[in-house]
Length: 394
Image (cartoon, rainbow, N blue to C red; front, side, top):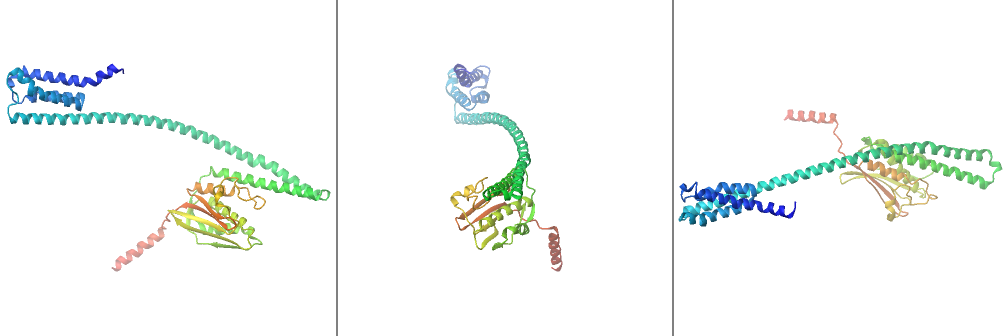
């Protein structure tokens, strides 16, 4: 729209206002002259209403002012007598002015509400288009994720089979050389073969941990009530072999039930307790404490030890994949155990963190959302029965 058309559009309501007031004045002077000079403002009411409906508040204001001036100053010139004669005429004029202003204000509010509704409708339609576009993008992303998951599964299969085969071959042939040709080999060669076998086993463990970590990305937790204390006792029984020949003191608090996948939660406890046993190996007497606390609507579980500890400046690296804060020569491992813990806890809606000091031990925490235990039906029935008896005695 060019500037000339914009100007015509802006001024058009006011031109219409002047035209309608002039027409109303002409009607009053000729076809309606028999009405006399009393209540002349009534002739202009329909004109002002039409002006307000067409042009809004300011056009209605102009029409009202023009009508008042016409009745007060212009019409008396043509009929040679005043139209405003007494207090009643002035009161009528005041009522006319106020009424026209109210009508113009209401009409302006209607215009603005209609414009706002049109704007909201336009925004809604635009938001719908954006939502549809976002849905299409989300579908494309989901398809990409499905394709990536399939590729990941293919990779996992390849790792578990294609990579394991050469590892088994290396370990097997190294073992044959050591068992059948050891008399013919120098001690240095035998130590090299043993080193090959150790690194092969380490590589096998790494492959196993990578596969576990990969599966956790796709496996949805199957949550159910878990008796935490029993699960910890079972885990400690399985780790009993790691305490042979050592003095290890376990302090296990009475733990509450929690909502979790029992198999995945067991893996968390295995990794944390294995970690504690590994890093307290240099202690004459290892202290490992297992406890919990309720904090901010969460169940916070922890494993505390008096082992090697770590520098808190590097705490952010603890749960990263392949991240190690100690040399492999000092403490064996693949650097994936704590990453698996974090992945499992996150899948349950919880969080993990750790605190420690070098050579003074460490404490590893993980949280799970707190769920109020449901009252068993038999308990509810017993309570109802006791209440009925008490009421009968009363």
